[in-house]
Every structure is written in structure tokens, then in C-alpha cells.
Length: 289
Image (cartoon, rainbow, N blue to C red):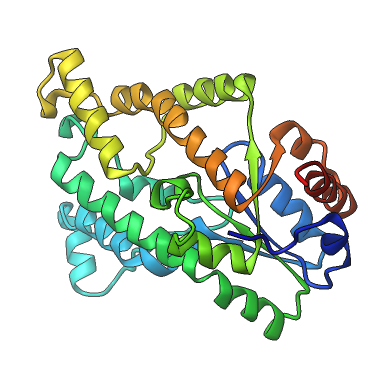
């Protein structure tokens, strides 16, 4: 277990700075990535965008086509290649990925059967791992093709679900730590409360570690006494969200302790420029020795 930059001096002197953000969605990963990208010297590699365009694009498009085929008017147009259906994914709009992942529960309320839901969860898991392991390829591409000196890997909140941060030979973390400085953006209790409130207003599909999902689903059915096909999908994922935050927090902490550094969400919110960010990371490296 080692880091790409061990000291503040090494970080400041590096002609090609490479970083990877991880942590819960909503704490500033994309915010600071946009600031750095706007500075003109940083290539922004979004894991979620890569998942949606490269590894799950066909799943997403075929799912939309399957829904369209249920409408006779659209079915005829599709069968004659008269219309095209695709997803309009962008860095700012990753809704097609979330919509495909879906939520388990009552089909009349838009829910998926658990078997189909788990299949899509597994598709996402494999896609995210592949996208993460593409980091070196994009580092090389950003330099040789676009001549960017610096690189940001902006990961999704579920990265911690697929790694074992206590294993010094974890294949994903071993590869990523060789390529970039891993930075945890850590929230406090107030941030957690705000994330829960935000999620409660607009619950969005998430990806879960299979063991966590199974425990949560079985506990919810036991607690509510509901049959699987009677579960309100939004109610279930709202019920699960706070538990998912608690489940992920120690996993992020272990990743930062063993493989990277920690900065707080409040510190990230104060970053207004590339220089601010470079100073913040130098301070974090000094503080963590």
C-alpha cells in the first residue's frame, strides 16, 4: 500500500498531477472536478459517464426500446428503422443509468422484480469495475491525444462496495493507487443529514454490495410484513439510504487510511481555483504525514 505522492513537496513538484476522488455523491467530487477542468490543464474522467456510455449503453438503450415496443405506433416505427432510440447521457445528466438500475418492488409503481433488479445491479458492478480499471488508459489518452498535463478520476459513490481496503493486494485499489492520488471527500453529521433530506425529496436508484442489499431487503420485508411485489419502490430505497450511508462510511475511511488521504467536504466547498486545490492537497499530505 503506497501513494503516488508521499509528501507535499512531491505533490507540488509533480509536473503531471493525477488524482482520484471518492466518497458519497453530493459532497463535492464533481464540483471541484469542474473547477479544475475549467482551469484548462486537467482532464476530467467521469466513471459514471464511462459506465453509461461504454459499458451499459446497450442495456440502457435496449430497455428503452423494449418499453417503446409496447406502444403499437412506436413499435411499427422501430421495426422499420424509422426512429432511433438512445440515451442522452452527459457529465451533468446521468439519469439514464439510474433509470435503468431501477428500484425493486411493486411493478404497478414502477418497481422491478428482485431477480431482474439483482441482474441489473450485477451489470452495474461489473461495469463500474471495468470503468475504474480503465483509468490508466484514460491517463495515457489525456496526455498523448489531448496534451493535458493533469488528470482527475471522478468516481461514483459505490466504489467502496467492490473493494477490500484492508487487503494490501486488493486488485482494484492496487491498480488505482499506482495511477492517481486517492482522495476521500469526507462529510460530517450535518452533511449526512442534508444528504438524507435531499434523497428523501427525490429518491434515486443506487448500487449496493449484494450482501448489503440482501440483508436490507429481507429486513424491510420482515419489518413491514409486505410481500415483495407489494413494496413501494421509493419507500424502500428511502428506508435503505441512511443505512447505506452508515454501511459505506467505514469502508471509505479504510480506503483513505490505507490507500490515500482525506479532505473534508467543507474544505472542498472553499476551493475556488486550481491554486486553492493544490494548496489543500499539500496541507492534507502534511497533516497526514
